[in-house]
Image (cartoon, rainbow, N blue to C red; front, side):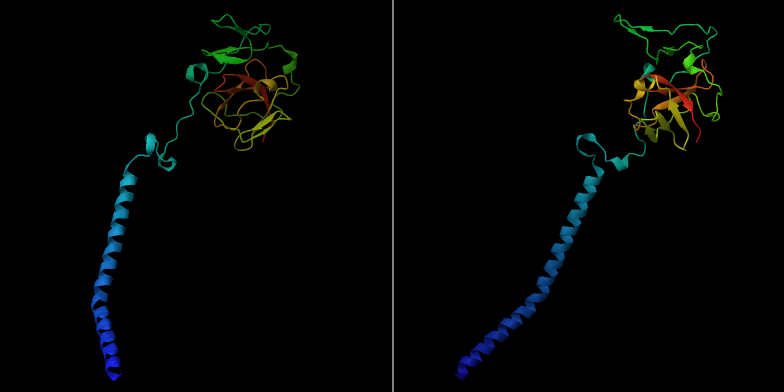
Length: 215
C-alpha cells in the first residue's frame, strides 16, 4: 500500500515539474500569436484606408468642397436684373417656343424676362411703397436659401429674419417649389412696380412678385 502511494506522489511530482517547465513556453507562444493578430489587423486597416470606396464613391467626410448648386434654368447662369420699361401700357411678352407652344408665364430664358405685367397694373399699386423698409442685398450677386415658409400667408424667410410676402395671384406659381433645397433664390427689385421685388428660382427659371415685410 505504501508503495502504491509513493508511486502516485512521484507521478504527480513529475507532471507538476513538466507543467512548470512548459508554462513559460505557452505564455511566449500566446504573446506571439496576439502580436501577430494585431499587426495583421493594422495592416488591413491601413490598406482599406488608402483605397477608394467601392464604385469610386468617397466617404462624405472626405469631401471638403461639396458639389456646387449650379443653376439649371436660363442656360445655367443667373440673369441680370430686368431693364425698366418706358411704356406703362406695354403688354406682357410671351416666349414662342420652337415646338410651336407659347409660354407667357413669368420666367427667364436666354436672359429675357418674359411675362412682365404692365407698369400701370392696378394690382401692384401701393399707398405707401416700402412701408417696411428697403431690402438692400438684391440682385444676381446675392443668392439665398429659405429658412421658413408660411403657405397660408404666402410668406417666406431668409437667414437673418428678413421675410417677404408673395402676391396672392402669383402664389400658385411657386407653391410647389422646393423651398428648403438650398440657396436656390435670387431677389431683384421690380423695375416696373414701385415697392415690389421679384423672387427668382434659379432652377425653374420662374419668378414671382413679393413685398418686403421687414425683419
